[in-house]
Every structure is written in C-alpha cells, then in structure tokens.
Image (cartoon, rainbow, N blue to C red):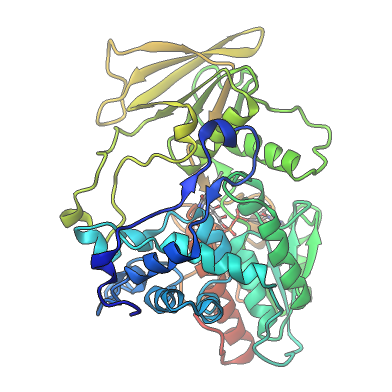
Length: 480
Ligand SMILES: Cc1cc2nc3c(=O)[nH]c(=O)nc-3n(C[C@H](O)[C@H](O)[C@H](O)COP(=O)(O)OP(=O)(O)OC[C@H]3O[C@@H](n4cnc5c(N)ncnc54)[C@H](O)[C@@H]3O)c2cc1C
C-alpha cells in the first residue's frame, strides 16, 4: 500500500472525453489519459484491503467477486504509486493476456466491488490498468515462453479473446499452436464487433504480431465445419479448442420482419469496422445510417455501439428502445455491494445524441415498396405484454436489432462432432476441465459460457489452455 492516507487525501478522478462535436467526426478513440502524477495519486487511493473483493473469489461459488481474471489490483496500484511501471506491467500480464483491451472496454466489475465503493467512489482501477498496459505496449511487446517445445500440436478454432488467450498460453507452454479463423483478420468481436472509437484495432494487430513471434500460426479464411472439416483437425492435432463465440443473434419474429432495412447489429457493425480497417467489403449491400431515422432495439453494449456508429455515419435521428423498465439512476450500495449493481448506465455513445425509451415492445413493422417505414410499438407491462391503449408509431428507415445472442451457431463444426449442448444451446464443458463430450475437443469463451464479456473470454481461454496442457502433458505449470 503506497500511501496509507491516500484514500482520505485524494478524490476519485477519471479520464475525460473529447467533446462530442469533435469525436463524432471520426472513428478514433477519444478518451484523454490522465497525467502521470494524477494516475499515481489515483493508485494511492487503493487501501490494500484485508479482503480485496476487487479480485477475490467467492469460496462457496468459486466465482470471482470482482475481476474475472483475478488481476492482483492492490499490488499493481502500489507499484504505480511508487512509479515502478515495469514491475506493474509484469504483474498485470501475469493474470491478463490483453490488459490494453480490458483497460479500454471492460465494464470493470472490479470497481463495483472495490471496498471504497461501499460509501465513497471506487479506485479508478480501469484507467490505471490501461495506463500500465499502454506503457508496456509503448516500450515494445516481447515474445514470452514458459518452457521448451513439447512436440504436441493444438488447433484453436476462433480468434476472439478466448481463442487468442488460449493460443498464446499454449504456445508459451511449448506447444505448436495453429489458430483457425473464418474472417480475414484475427480478434473476433474485439475487431469486428466493438467499434474503433472504443478500441482502435492496432491494439489487436500488436498482439497478433506478438503471438506470431511466440510461434502461433494464424490461418485466415478457414471456416471450420464449412470449408475445412472439423474431423480433419481432430485427426491431425493432439487437442482442439473451440472458441467460436456465440454468434446466433436473437431475432424479433414479428409481422414485417422481412422488410428491407431491418438488420441484426452484427450485420451492421462489422461493415463499419471493415471500412475503417480498409478491408475489402466484397459484393455486399452497404448498410448505412446516413440521413436515416434509425431505431436501435436493445439497450445493452451492442445497442450502444450501434448508436455511436449511426451518429458517426450521419443519421437523421437515433432512437433506442429497451423492453426492460428503466433502472434506477443510482444503485442502493448497502444492498448491492460487492456485486454488479443494476442501475441506469449511460455510455459515451448515449451522450452523443440518442433518445432512449424503456419498457417498449415493438409489435410490428410496416413499410412501402418492401422497405421498412414505421415501427408499431406499445408500452410493456411487468410480464412484457403490451398495455392496451398505449400503442404508438415511429418513423424508421433503418432498424438495428441488438437484443443479444442466443447461442453459438450449431450448423457446421458443432453438429459435425455431435457435441453435447447445455440447456441454453452452448457447448457443454465444465469450467475446470473445459472438455466437451468428445475427449480431444475443448471449448471456452462465449461458445461455452454464452454471450459475456471480453474479460470472461480471456479467463476462459487461459483456463482452457491450463486444462489442455494438463491433458497433453499430465501436469501443467500454466496459471489458471
Ligand atoms: C457489438 C458488441 C460489443 C461488445 N462490447 C463489449 C465491451 O465493450 N466490453 C466487453 O467486455 N465485451 C463486449 N462485448 C462482448 C465480447 O466482445 C464477447 O463476450 C467476447 O468477444 C467473446 O469472446 P470469444 O473469444 O468467446 O468470441 P468472439 O469474440 O465472438 O470470437 C469468436 C471468433 O470465432 C470465429 N469463428 C466462429 N466460428 C468459426 C468457425 N466455424 N471457424 C473459424 N472461425 C470461427 C469468429 O469469426 C470469431 O472471430 C461486445 C459484444 C458485441 C457483439
């Protein structure tokens, strides 16, 4: 604990954003880092609690109380306060393969469970994490290795944060790792879902380069179960990890759904990320919000990303509907701490010019000449049924469905291997062995856990690598 009285002396201070009118002119990141002196003072607010809920594990449920990768937050806060950035980076990387990603996009459950958050403002853990990670990147990411070559070959399918973390850990343990990805570039939702204004993709490129120098071979355009049989990988490799994410979007099967202009968020967002990245879009119909009345259905992260992207594309108006009632502005801390509280969350994209409405049910779409023109809605009751007499209509030229994901795509590799599924349709594999119903085949990330967060995907990738290393070698030195 760097400064015993730090939490009494310093108030929480967080990073600022560029003004809205400036940042919506491009797709660049707009968070302004704090000066070094301020970041070190923020780290000094950490109290090195006896029971650090920010990164602990609930001994009854074995689930994390705060950070899913168990970042040793008080330790690196202390190191930052004393200006020992190199050791802080070493410590941070010992639990998290991609802290520059979580430092940017994690909702920071660690801050919700920070002890200071009981009756004060939590330590600015996320800002401190990003500062440590960005400094490490600026001084150059070097290849790392934990041991000699083992002669074992592992295939990882899907290069999102789960697949990348799993592949990186296994390569560092000495295995010959091949990562198969159906897209033209690596990163999964870090590259094609999360917009550049939240995280520029050079971050992912740097990690891919580091992993290549550690011996991971990336195979792009390899759609396993479609243009590359999964049976071939199972035959050729000593183990296979499936980390293909949860890609089946939740649909809204109401009258008029077939009209043009109604799209899943994950049809819209990847197009823009590809444009920004200079990738060839091929012969597809562009989905653009420019000069349109846009309605985003779904109030989560994905919906928020659709809002920010629509605003940058020059939408005429952006409306966001959520079926759940509006949560309270502030949580009741004595009731919710140290758990993740339900409260109204206003993202940077929400601040850029959206109208939000809650407890709204869309009952049908209507249009002209096959193109959507109107949404027909009603207020939802507590059972999500329309309240009679509450009906209303709204003009819409582009509707984006951002209502989450139901499970992984089953057609292709999952069906071909006839893998057991859990009741929600995810690959069934427990969270110790990560082994599917086929002994050589493992699963991790959203494909096993269901739609979640980057930090959970990193945890699952690391733990799956630990399990695979143990399966192949009988023992493992990889951290869980
Ligand atoms: C729009 C959006 C915004 C989000 N924002 C945030 C955020 O701000 N913060 C946060 O923490 N989380 C966010 N999330 C959630 C987070 O991105 C995911 O939980 C996380 O990326 C899951 O990681 P994953 O590796 O399991 O899967 P994914 O990231 O989905 O990666 C799966 C990869 O597997 C590939 N693949 C799938 N099937 C095959 C196959 N058969 N053959 C070859 N390759 C295949 C896919 O192309 C993809 O590259 C967001 C999600 C979305 C959709």
